[in-house]
Structure formats: C-alpha cells, structure tokens
Length: 322
Image 1 (cartoon, helix red, strand yellow):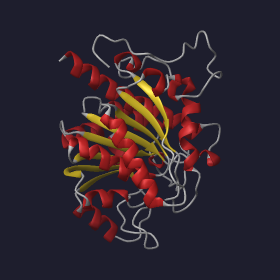
Image 2 (tube, rainbow, N blue to C red; image 1 turned 180 degrees about the vertical axis):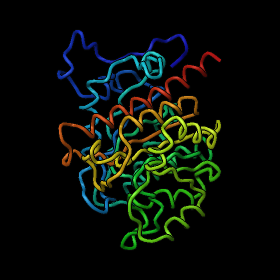
Image 3 (cartoon, rainbow, N blue to C red; image 1 turned 120 degrees about the vertical axis):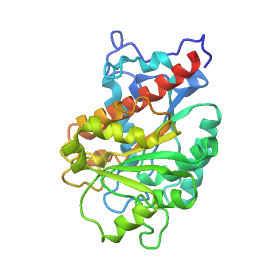
C-alpha cells in the first residue's frame, strides 16, 4: 500500500451487528478484496505435531470468531492499527494432515508467497510445529531473526518417538538451521516439570535466555519487557506465542496446560512494552477450542493477535513517514 492510499478497515459495527457476517479476523476485509496487504492474518489449521490433546487445527477460526469484539482503536498503544496499515485476512493455508513433512513444506512455500508481496504475517495456529516453516520463510527475507517465544514449555527438545518435526522441537531445528540470531533468543512464561536438568543445559547452549512465569509474577510486566527490549535491540524480531504461556484459568483451551502461568493481563502488558521493537511477523498457536469454556482462550488469543498486529502497523506507518 502506498502512503497516499487509505486502508480498508473493519465492517462498521454500528451498522452491522458483530455477530452477523463472515468471521474474518477483527471483521477485516479478505486479502482478495484488497489485493495486497501490509499485514496478512493467516490461519494454519494443522495439529498433527501434537504430543497430547489434539484440536488446535480448529484454533484459527475460533480466534476469528472471538475477534468479532475487537474495535479499531487500541487505547493501550494509542493507535488505530487498521487505519495505519492495510491489514487483511488471508484465509487459511491448507496443509496435508497426514504428512508432516509435506505440511511443513507447504506452510513455508505459502509464507514465502505472502512475504514476497511485502506483507508481514500474523499467523493463527495450529500447533507449534508451524513456527519452524514460518521462521524459515522470515529468515529468507531478513536473515537470522531475534525470537521471543512465549510458552509454558521450551520446545527445544530433539525428537519425539524419533520424529524431528513436532510441536516440541521447532526451535531446536531453527537453531540448527541457523535461522535464529542466537544473541537474542528468549523464552517467556516457562514453568512446570521437565524430563531432566539436561533440558535446561541444552537450551542454554542454544543461546536461549529464560523468563519464567514466576519471574513475571515477582518482577512485573514492565521490568520484564524492558529486559527483553534490551536483549532484542532493533534486530528483526519474530514473536511466537503458545497460548499455554497463560495459566489454565486464562487459557483452558489448549493441548498441554501447565499450572502457575501468566495472566492474560501480564501477557498483553509485556507485548505493549515491546511496541518499539522491529516486529517483522508473529504467530499465536495451540488454541484448542474443544477444551475451552465461554471462549476464554479464544478471546485471550484474539487480543494477543490484536496487540501484535498493532505493533506491526505502527512500525509500518512510522517507516512510511520517516
């Protein structure tokens, strides 16, 4: 979109009730209705990489339904993201549910096409396996990227049942492939039992720093966000958010819940504290609506995606006026 074009925004909720009409993300136009977008919201309905409860293949559409309540002005960031940049819903990347290698390749190719148009990606999962092909695609454009990984789990294990591509292994593969900037890697919200202390040793060797959910509780969102900003600097940044970084009280609808997590308020405040970062793309994954109650998880995920989209839109608008 050029600087003199006006973005097409969401459906006017004063004219069309929120519960009516197609459930695109935040009631935004489809990508085919606007041609190109600065931020493309895409779903990846894939959960063949899960190790416990399946169902995240339905997460993207659940997030879209919950996003009907989002409004165009974000007071927390003092921005109207859909007026600053063209944001559109790109629909779903259709992937093979029976062949995980083919699925990974399909996701990477589709991400390549979207990023090739100049868009940044706001991806709705799907399980965390999808982060690897998305990171591969982003790294082709930006080089090795900084990573903030919000999750109850490390996701840097080697294999499950001999399989190297699962939702618990994407970031080990990404480090091995050289697509991450190992000077700027952080897990946020980790907690719970591990297979052994070696898990932490291996993770540290890969370059990850860890901010546990207990650290967030004790130190507060502002201090954590400040620490993360200093670690990231102005590097191209990818943020990957497993919704199970939230406590099951705030996100029951997920496949591998762990007690003692962050609140949705803490997650949103940390993200808002990263508004100055060079966020090039992001994902929100592991929403499994079959285990949800009253859309608690989907609502949290939709607001999380909204904050991430706002950060990207502000950065795009600032670059146009620089």
